[in-house]
Structures are given as C-alpha cells and as structure tokens.
Amino acid sequence: MEDITDYRIQVSVRVKYLSEQSDEPENRFVFAYTITVSNEGKQAVKLLARHWVITDSNNHLQSVNGKGVVGEQPVINPGQSFEYTSGTVLATQVGTMSGSYQMALDDGTEFTVPIQQFVLSVPRVLH
Image 1 (cartoon, rainbow, N blue to C red):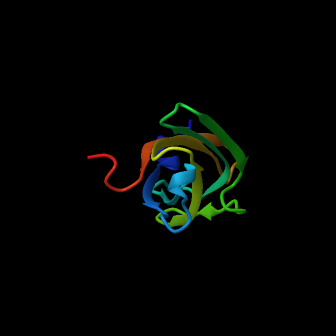
Image 2: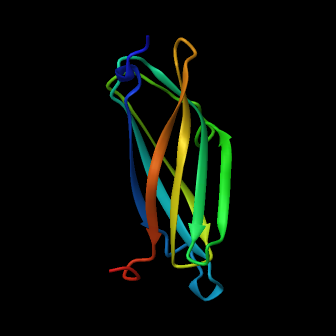
C-alpha cells in the first residue's frame, strides 16, 4: 500500500501584469506567472504534463495541455523545488487560471496535482 506522504506536492503562484507588452486600447493584456512546485514528500517526482484552463471576464475559455513545463519535465527531489515563469494573454483586464500537473514517482506511479484557481488582473482594476 502506498503512503500518501510519498507524493506531497505544494504549488505556489505569483502573477505580474506586463504593461510594457500589453496594448490596452487593443484589448491585449499580458500576464506573467511564476510557479514554484515544492516536493514535500518522501520520493522524487517527475512533472510529466500540464493542463491549464484560462478564463477571461467575457467567459472565453482557453484550454492548454502539454508535456512538462517550459520545455522541461523536471525531476524534483524530496525537499526541493522547481520554479519557472511563463505567461498568457487575455482580451480582458481580469481573468483566472486553474489546472493540474500530471506527476510520476520513480516507480512509475502517476498522480495528479490540482492547481487552485488564481486571478490575473491589471493593477487597480480589482479592489
């Protein structure tokens, strides 16, 4: 029987609005997000794939699926973290992202790590 502590993964997110890459009159709002994936479990894990659901305030949905993140399928050892920065473009000043990572233990056991919804917002738009 597997121990749930074999795969305890924490995901934290920081978002930044990129005004210099955005074109507000053309409804192009660019955001960078930095993700930190921390392995608090007992075994090394490999990040195999990602799934994102990106929604703008017009309820336009984008679904993004792919291998790894930023061209990598990192192995994260116990007590270590992997951090990367990526980005997305919205047609509105506010949106959300949520998703999941597909991960694997050394023995091939795969599991899904949910990523809680986070907000993408131009500064001073939300209180």
